[in-house]
Length: 73
Image 1 (cartoon, rainbow, N blue to C red):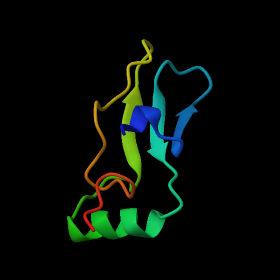
Image 2 (cartoon, one colour):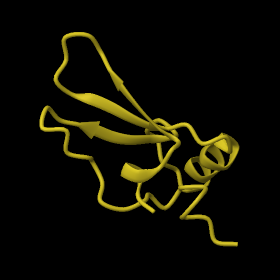
Image 3 (spheres, helix red, strand yellow):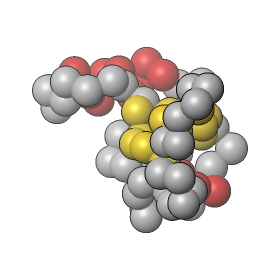
Image 4 (cartoon, rainbow, N blue to C red):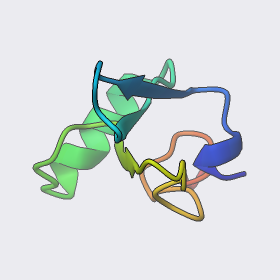
């Protein structure tokens, strides 16, 4: 699965902008925040990237912090 196909993605567009922000709104946000803390990632937890005016998705596969795909159990 990729973020592009995921039901938990949320695309936010500010009025008047041509770019949109993409976030993960998976119910297990605690796992995402913990992953960012342990790996010392300082950007916003759950932030995937920006979509440009051509609507090209920012990543081609899932991020390592994804609770659905990246979690190694």
